[in-house]
Image: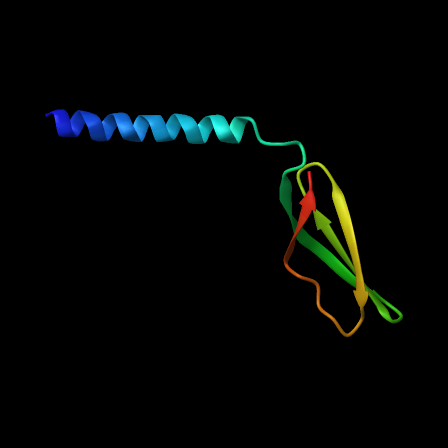
Length: 74
């Protein structure tokens, strides 16, 4: 019985630590922006990405391909 209670206590403590850490995440935390569309304009490829709040662009050479997602500042 004590072993079972100790396991439950450890799980609860780690859950609390993890949830508190997530709640206090830095404002500089990176988020994933997903590719929405891409367009070739002459010799450049313009990749458009969206997060929940913002739109981001990445410009590459036309012989490259857009990544499906990128990490951006929050």
